[in-house]
Length: 303
Image (cartoon, rainbow, N blue to C red; front, top):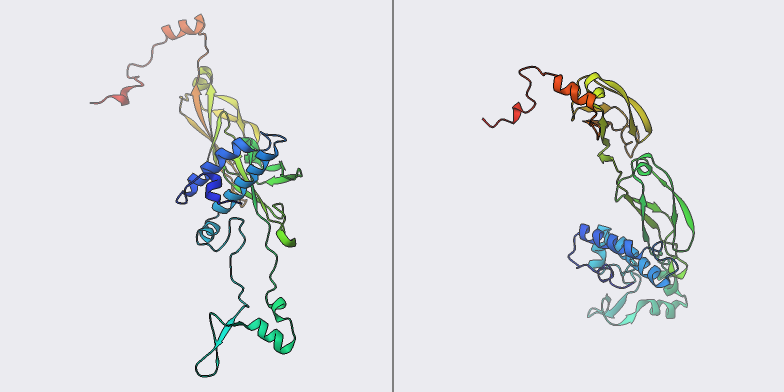
């Protein structure tokens, strides 16, 4: 892989948010689902995924910037078992730069291949990959199985935990690129993007919803059906409710990632008149006389 900064088109001083933004913009344009059968685009998507996987990890990014690992994540290090020596002024051996390779010396003296054993290292791990999947709001809140297509064409059912958040990453062990020289395969990381809901929104573990109610329901009170992430439930609108009155549905929010605790749902009432007001309602309102001290705008006075 080329320089990951160049692959994503960001400066080496880019913030984590800038790196994430650049990756998302490229991923939307180059995703294989958007370009089916285009091998060039597919390879490019693999490159940006690998680059983002390296740079989104603060420790691996630091190691790359320091020259400790390469762009493919493999370590750049010297063989700790190779030593060199030179004869010192006192007749002893001073290990340091220059001179004869001590592994060669032991091999010549004892006829044993120490170098092969001493230099044996595990084959490097394969490259990790990052995928981005978009999940509907309710699926993310409820959790469940979500199918992901890998570059190899293999499909996996990924277990999305209840309450999954936008930007959350799931790890698929051993589903990355094959390891070179017979090394173990890398991992695949699935980054979740949660689609916005048309009328629900999440704030922490709580869910918020604006609920239209009729004028009679607000004035007289009523039992109404309210949508939640679990389906429709019944709620009571108290008599004399105004627009802005908030009802709390305890335990109808999002499940905490570690389980046990669950948030609430807050329902804000919005009194809504029909598009066409009929004559009966108009006549009633003309004849209705509020109390003399009734002024819904009295708190807006500036004096």
